[in-house]
Image (cartoon, rainbow, N blue to C red; front, side):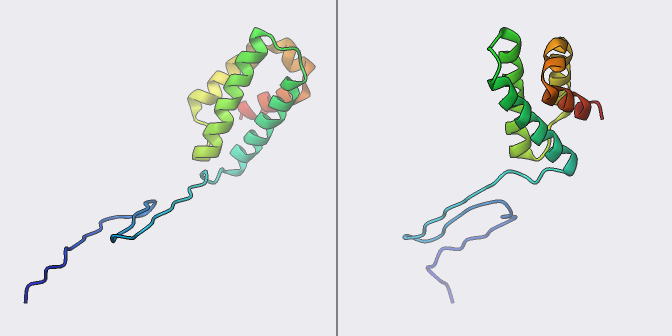
Length: 116
């Protein structure tokens, strides 16, 4: 017996959103990946340093550091971790900003976490 109904075959649908039918509605809410405890600690240190930087007079150094911190925060929130390249970039900026590291305790805390 032949059917006039269309057939739908679904493969692996994990992490997907779909709707089937003429009045179907699909809505998806994806949240960032869960960060490891080390990356959660790193995220907290990144956020704390960004708060501290906001209290300082902006310079070329602080602006570059804040941009790198914002990118790191976004990456950890999105993927659950900060990749090696991102960590190396922050490490370099903090090394270049040694006077800033000495001035702001949160920068020292973050530099310590990046050394792990």
